[in-house]
Structure formats: structure tokens, C-alpha cells
Length: 314
Image 1 (tube, helix red, strand yellow):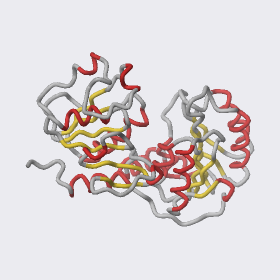
Image 2 (tube, one colour; image 1 turned 120 degrees about the vertical axis):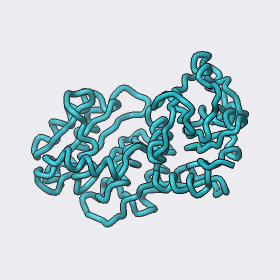
Image 3 (cartoon, one colour; image 1 turned 90 degrees about the vertical axis):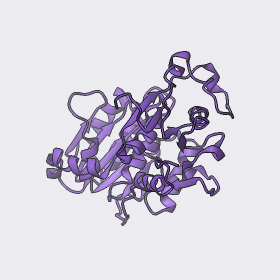
Image 4 (cartoon, helix red, strand yellow; image 1 turned 180 degrees about the horizontal axis):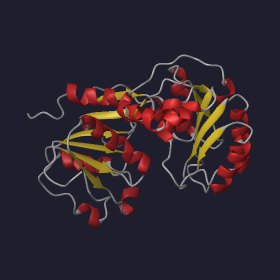
């Protein structure tokens, strides 16, 4: 968005998945907004419990000049002190995820897997906020209509990889590919940056017995990710990705979670929360279908912002 006296600022963490939570909310508000990229200095590693810009690099700090916005949307622990610094200048704050100073937020968005107690300024959602919208899915239905011609059941496979490692073990990718190919009429798959070339090649080999479309990270052509969400009869999502699991909730397809083996407590809590809500099941239950309703959690967040008058004037 262009610079100027926008009423909404988005504090964009360098981590794409974290920034997407704040950006996704801003996009759904339908208001012009300014994206403020955050660059972290060494002090950002500390749990700064007060309103401050100390965690930012000097270059990033220079972007914080009046006129101040009406609403700031932020996500992640490190951006919380920055958002609260802006609140001292008269802004209102919508913050995603756990963070110090949560009592100072006008609205805090947390996942059910975070296990935080209810609070007047807190809304609990399944998964995390994201940028996939019903409108984007409607557009993708036409743009990727060719996927409809694949044999049913069409299985959408969203594959990630280790959060803090170089590439997924090819043996894990191959095993998952063989499992999915065993119950699919066809497979529509996409691999992420964390998957790695070797694991992507192993997945392609494992899927070779069935008709499939596999988009490798960085390959030519548009990633059919949204088309997969639209046209899949069944979704299989690797358990490492909070974003992909959350985005799959917008669809009506049964969701099966495929752990990759190194998920930590937070990811396991996410899996449990989705299963407890009847929104997902373990991969071992596939392909038995089950009914579920789409969950547009970002729409709930936007409704809460408007109901609380966070964009209105005093």
C-alpha cells in the first residue's frame, strides 16, 4: 500500500508466516493500510516487557513518524513492544499470538492451541490468521479449472518440512507419497521451500503410480496452491505448517494431518485443537471421509474489530 496518513498500519515481522497473520487481517478490513517492515536488532532477542522501539534496527526505527494511525495490527512476540509503543501515541492495537504486555492490547488474537485463559480483550480462533479468503478461492476455481478433470478422489497434498533444518528427509516424503497414492484417484501436490529438492524428487517418484500434479518450490509457472484448496476432495497437510493447516480450514474438504516427526509441543497442540473441534483427523484415519464445516476465522476477527469500534473515532 502507498505511504500516507492511512488509518491502519501493519507491523510486518521478517518471518513470512508471522507477517501474513497481520496482513491477512488488514486486507479483510477493506481499509487502505501501510505495511511497516520490521528489522530486528540484537535487543529483540530479549523479552522486552515494556513499550519500546529498542528491538528495532536504527533503519527500521526511522519509519516510525507521525501522523500516527488509528489502528495497528501486529503479530509475534517481538513486535508487541513496538505495537504498545504506538499505543502510547493514541493508536489501538490488534495483536496476533502470545506476547508480553497482552493486557495492553485492545484485541489479542490467539489460537486455541495456545491454551490461554479467556480475557475481555482476547478472541480465540482455530489455527492462525492468514491471507486465504473465500473470494480468492472463488477466483481460483476458474483459474485452475483444469484440475477438476483429474480422476476422483482428488487428494490435495500440502507438504512442508522441518522448521529449523535443511530440507525434509526424502524417505519421509516418499512414505507419505506412497500412502496418499494408495487411496487417491489423483494427487494435486505442492512442496514448500522447507521441503527441499531431494524430498520433492522422492515425492514425485512415490506419486508416479497415479495421475498427479506436483509443483516444486521455485519451479516455473504459477503455484496451484489455491486451486488445490478449491478442487481437492480430500486434503492431506503436513503437520509442521501452522499456516497451511489454518488455510485448509477455509475449504469444506476433510483434512488429514500428516506429522513429519519433529513437530514440537505447539504443533502437537495445534493438531489436537483441530481434531477436538472436528476439523481434522490423523493421516492414519484417511481416506475415511467425514463432514466438516468451513471455518473463516479471519472473518470472525474482522467482525470483532468492528464490533469493538477499533476503527471508529472517540
